[in-house]
Length: 420
Image 1 (cartoon, helix red, strand yellow):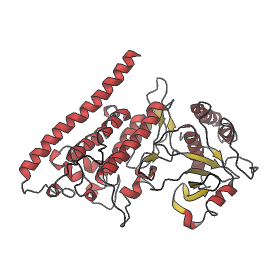
Image 2 (cartoon, one colour):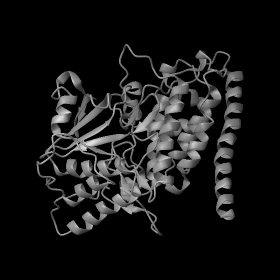
Image 3 (cartoon, one colour):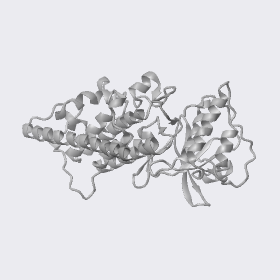
Image 4 (cartoon, helix red, strand yellow):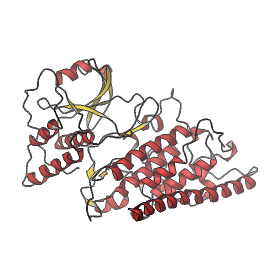
């Protein structure tokens, strides 16, 4: 749904009541779409597309609250600097508190300049008002007083995955292995809901660490749906659209042709999962030239089983199960296949990740410190022959296990289809 390229400022009259109203059965969303003024000859096409999104909601799922600007001023202490959580190209995000519901909130104040902000605002309101899942961020409401474009979300106290993985403050502990796998599993379940349960399916299109928010228990929720697209539906194999998203995360076929499928999201998931395993950014210009692109750096290492331990985040200090590392790298490699048709379905990815989420009470097998190495260094020679043989054997076992997981999931799906 980057399919609204021609929005002028939303023409909503500044006649909001002093207290917010919760409209009946999605009337607020219908009104929001109705009052959009579109430029260009294709306005009818885009209005129809916007109205189509409303049909996803099944008549009762919309619970978004319409806020007045005055209410959000009060909640954020007049958007005080001390309440600022962060900012980017979209605008600023503030922490706020609603007195009437005794609820902490995140208030995203979009930049008023630029047409793209209006388009993304509408898409996000529609998407998150109508799609609900434990691994999608909850949109509490929005504000369109005058020319204000504000989104109100549930507050996520642990910020984003990026904060804990790629922008770790010196006084913060790195994420442990189990937490990383739990986050990957939850994020994959969010994509699974969008791809397989939402009808029509939704392609997220902007899967990256900064868009994965973490609650007080480090449970992940996908946020920022401004670039999401509906489809493909019927006998269509893809959606053709302008290439948008974040460099380093886009699937190669989408970047080259603009043809978008759910497999584009699977590739992006593979990039983020590799970030989770390695602690490296998708694109990091501060590293040597041959290590700046994460996927390109990882490709030769995927082919050399003896060097798999080099890919683990050094901040883990070897505290991860060797079998789990091998399985995780196998899943990441499958998601990052050059050919979209060779990638697993996100449902299969979720199934595989469920095997990687280890209970905190389980005994963990950890990699010996002497096997850890940095970058392109070779494994240490001391007592390495036996250790390398053990690792090769473990990899062979686990590679088979991951393949079995994917095969089993597909067999179950085929059997279900045959029965129906």
